[in-house]
Image 1 (tube, rainbow, N blue to C red):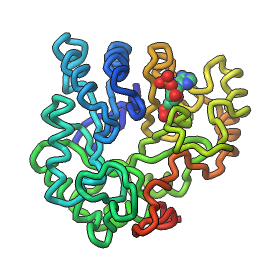
Image 2: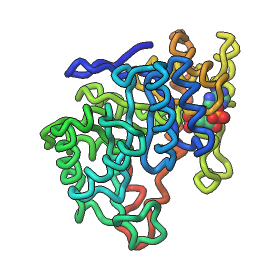
Image 3: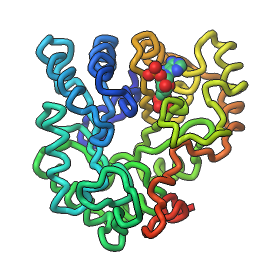
Image 4: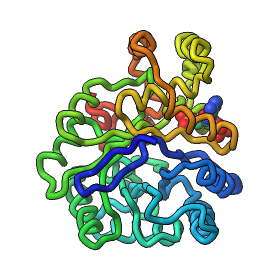
Length: 317
Ligand code: A2P
């Protein structure tokens, strides 16, 4: 497994297990099977509502000697209702307690969007707090303090545009060490890739398989299905691999970390094996042509009437 090496020598396995949409009741088994298959990177978040069950799987795996804590990379994310500097540490403490860990490898600001304390998802504009009232740099300062205290080894962001990321890069004491964003052949984000490469900020690709299992309310009626894209299927057939393996191999080929979600043993094994797939230049050229700037997670749930958020100022495009 290829790893991404950080300035302090820590190594992040480039392929990890996504846990968004892994329901309580199935995520415990999913994490245990993934660890026995050899996954060493688990991507979590408070808002996924399943960290306590993941914690149970992790603590059992440690006790059974399947893996040691220091050989595992655990990422989680600060929820939007904890952006006030005074709330950031409690957001992390909840996650650490649920995951039964005493530190995280990586902690991310989940969205560049602030919610009132106690609000998980906004029902009206009044549930949101503008970034003018709660600047991301203030939240970031509290994230930096978590590193100082040894509660997380690295900090970063998620769903940040180049504009928002560069504001942190230019002004933060500790530079963000990750931007986790939606990336796949229909949303290739070349300018973000170039910016991050130039600045030395790694990227993690979420929804790399197109997240077909996301809630119906987040789906458009006419959306294209990435796993069934004829060009992806043709490359898979050519290599005698699955379309999911093509997508994962493509993400790794671009130098991005990738976190496909699966709760199924066979598909987890298949996805992990994609780390050994090499795509040809012709494959890469064919996939480059698929870009259509299509977001599966488009952020409309933040653009509530009466709030300061719009899709234009969320993505800065
Ligand atoms: P399952 O969890 O039942 O395996 P994403 O990572 O883009 O969010 O996509 C996750 C979705 O893709 C889930 O529905 C997951 O189903 C499915 N999936 C994961 N791995 C594969 C695979 N190798 N082939 C087909 N579908 C997959």
